[in-house]
Image 1 (cartoon, rainbow, N blue to C red):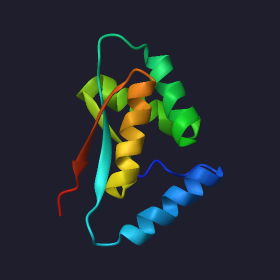
Image 2: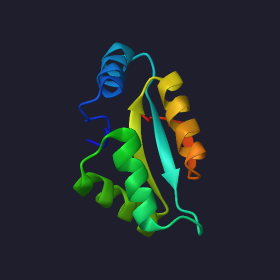
Image 3: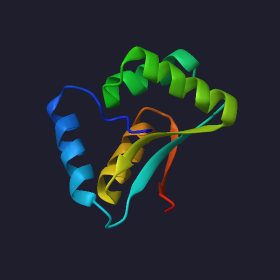
Image 4: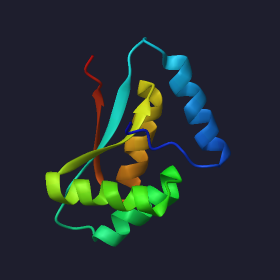
Length: 102
């Protein structure tokens, strides 16, 4: 499972609740894309600080972005994924949202 919303802060709990409420009504995902600008350590830090990921998970996703060019960093309702993508843009990362395939 790719869900990256496993932190202990209140926003993480709210995001998990939104994911449950989304049910089958359309699931979306936020994808971070590789870029030639940001350091791998910075991308890892962004994943840790924004999503509340443990270091090991943030590191693994950063490596996936680096080696394959992209990684899914969150899943849920469209509005939440749009907010996550905007946050990644604020950190200077390239991110998009995609509808999950069935």
